[in-house]
Image (cartoon, rainbow, N blue to C red):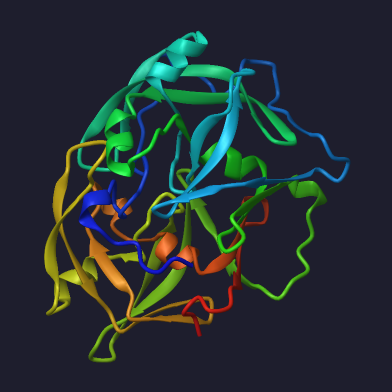
Length: 317
């Protein structure tokens, strides 16, 4: 855990570094996620259908190396809050990916951004290949300027839906597993995970200074470096104005403050930063890497659960 990563200068979406968490428009002509008659396929190099890849933690974002259609390694963000898979338009053109439709998707800020779509794309990480993906092409230049490094794309819902995804923040590793071969045996706490419109949600609670408790449902967003986002920040006396939604979409004005505690799955985080608000109502209640980065986090969409294993010295009780 690197401590709280809150700085208005690096806020991209509903969270400090939220990526493409807003709703998306279907491409013209109703382009499917894979070519008709072809089932998506995931192939592992290992017989146990597991692969472990290192990641770079950049301001709370999880960057992994991805090859697209046999390309050189590209820098993709692993983002549980991204309903769509995205590739930078310059990279798509460089690789000669054919566009098959257009539309708009919600960016980090208000409004939407225009995109084209490419389909039946094969992605490869070390030890694993996954085919039949649909990616939106978008200009990620504003995102790069905010993050301070190259961003070639975003791995979103399709990866989380096909695999068990483990992010071990302290170890700097992502483990990908075939769901049918996975059985959890560990000391972690299992939380029910609601997956709606390609977004994962869990229950949590914010404790205010007066002792009152605000229970709610929170988007689990590994593409945000915020701790907690919630409109309750408007009730905090020590809040301050800040710019939100910086990066993709139109920046919006919001607020940031500090609550007494945040509770999730029997764990308590004291004095968390609380921010608000995102580009949409849906993205104004989330937990980002300021929470997730304190744990070994396991996303198991096939069983509708998220598992948290606490890391020592992470400020959790």
